[in-house]
Structure formats: C-alpha cells, structure tokens
Length: 276
Image 1 (tube, rainbow, N blue to C red):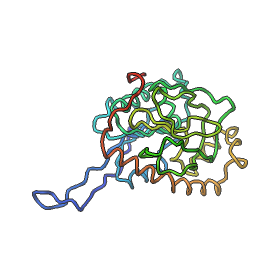
Image 2: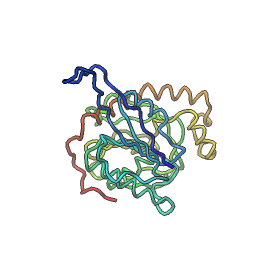
Image 3: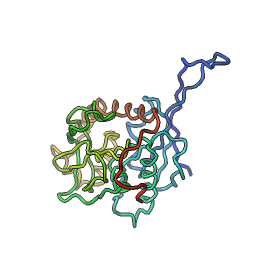
Image 4: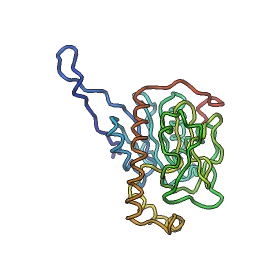
C-alpha cells in the first residue's frame, strides 16, 4: 500500500505556447513533504501550499522509505510527530529523515521543519536536543521574533509576537554551529532558527487544525492539562486557528516563493554536512 499523496497541479492559462499559441501549463513549485506519523498530517498547510502554487508529494517516513535523492524537488517540508528525536532505537527511521534534511541543507534547498522535524534538522546539522527540564510546553502560546530577522525573507514580515501551537516534550538546547536564532520564548529559547542559507526549523506548530489538537490532547491528557487557561476547548482552538491563519498562511506563501526562486547561495555552516 502506498502512502504517497500527490498535491494539486496548478496551471497558469495566461502563458501561450510560442509555437501553437495555446496556453501551456505553468510549472508548479514541487515540494517533498515528510510526514513523520499518522497523527500529524499537513493539516491547513495542504491548502496553503496549494493556494501558493505548489504541488507536493507526501511520504509517511515511519512506514515508507524516503526518496533516495531530492532530485526534482525545489523544497522540503518536514512535519512533527509523536516520536522523540532521541529515541532512534525504537524509531530507526529517524536516521533516514536526518540524512535527508542534511542533504536538503547541503543543496541549499528551502526547507521548513516543524516541531520534531525541527529537532531532527538541528541534530542533522550539529545541534543538540534534550528533554525539557520543566516538563512539556503545550497549548496556544506566543513566540517573540529576534531583531536579527529584519531582512529574513520568511520571518521579517511576521508580527513581533505571533501566535503558535506548542506540543512538545523535548527542546533544541543548542543550535547547530553557524545557525541563526530567529524566535524565542521564555520557556524555550530556540523556537525558530535558520541553518545554512534556507533551512528553517520551528519548534512550534503552524499546520494544526482544531481536531488535530483535540486528538493530541485526548492521547496525552497529562500534557494537555498544562495548556494555558486550563486546557483545550473547541471554541478556543477555533479562534486560535483563525489567528494562526492570518499570520502563517502568508508565511507559507513566502516559503513557496523562496522554493520557486531555486537554490540560494551557500551560508557558513560551521562544519561539513551531512552530519548524520
């Protein structure tokens, strides 16, 4: 059984074929989406990516081998998951995800890695992940941009303290050598970072739906009780996700434009990749 999900192919009918004069299809920006578990799908990102002109292949890394190379892809999205980045013994497929993320950074392919994906991106490029000392960070929260993002193509136009969804037990305690810190929070310093020229990791979630978060809360009620205002309600999550869309859908559009532009100039990584 295959778990590949083909994204919508989009067409620009305004571009005529130079020979026949008939409109020819525009080339959509092609992305690889690495889904790490069944309970953390693309969610709202699916519509946002398609709306920005991208098509994508989704591979369920915990059940299906990843592509051998990134040939033919213009960018990578790596989602979160219920495994720990530190538990490769129980989840040996984590090594292949780290290898692919290191390859993406080495090739200067725009990459967006979320939660567990961000932790794997960090460890693939020399960072360190550890359990959070004070327990999980959960619920609708705010993160704060750093001053250094003023010229960043993805983060510059974000509000200074955007809403996000948190649901993680581990944290990135040390960023990869040469990485740039983009956002922080009081409980978790390394909330967003850039490694290489266009490898973005965000510890938080932007892709969730209300039903996704309620499912996570039901599966881990002890963690869910740590959410602000006493936990999760459907009404509160619906409002939170409206706020998320206002900020993170334009962010997703900027990511697709970044991928459309092609590989970016190399940035210093502090050491040679891959590091997996």
